[in-house]
Image 1 (cartoon, rainbow, N blue to C red):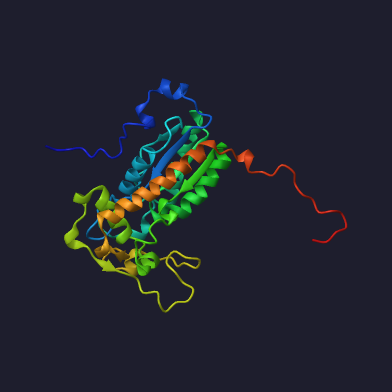
Image 2: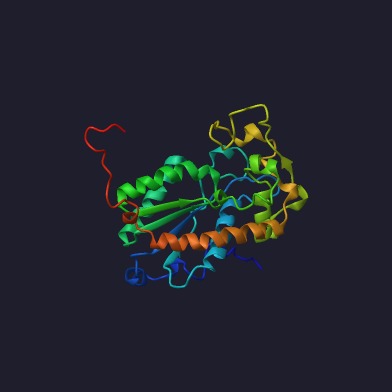
Length: 280
């Protein structure tokens, strides 16, 4: 029997499940809308091209199980395609241009604003989207007045005691971290007979890094023959479950904080002025 993949249709807290009347009447003052943003791109010979979006769906599902019932937190369907041009030419990769993804984010935000929502979280699970989402979140804030947050769960650094030092430094794509997660989420989607280890060699450079303070504009084909950067051979579903549990624990508290956040609370009450004639 042909089975439909059910990952993008949540049973609870799924905004498109509501009627227009329900959306109109729901409380919106503290409501937080979450827009998952992922990618469809190659992840080596062992992981599905849906890896990034799949991880985002599973992370949000586990996180929202822990959120207080009285918090108005709602999910949108994922934007499954991201800016993946660093993988163009590698089979299975479907990329949006930066301008297209930027326009999609703006259009969605303006539609949410028109429905009366005030808060939007861009929940990102693809490294190639990070710089663009940083830019577009500010643009949404300026154009719509909405409060916009953006987050990549991998930036929470919850796996430092689970991964090797070389994986922590170079394991940016399809390695131990992502493979362990997919093993714990959809084990039958992992081709374990093709697990591979391939790590870029940056040891001769003092300042250049793949994702550090001084970066270079690499394509995956520049740094890898297999399409991965990391060590998938050390991945286990147990590690993936631990990572998911740690992330969802942090995120459940963080999402509740975002619901309560007001930008007016950040600004100081009384500016301190330099006395006339004094030197700083």
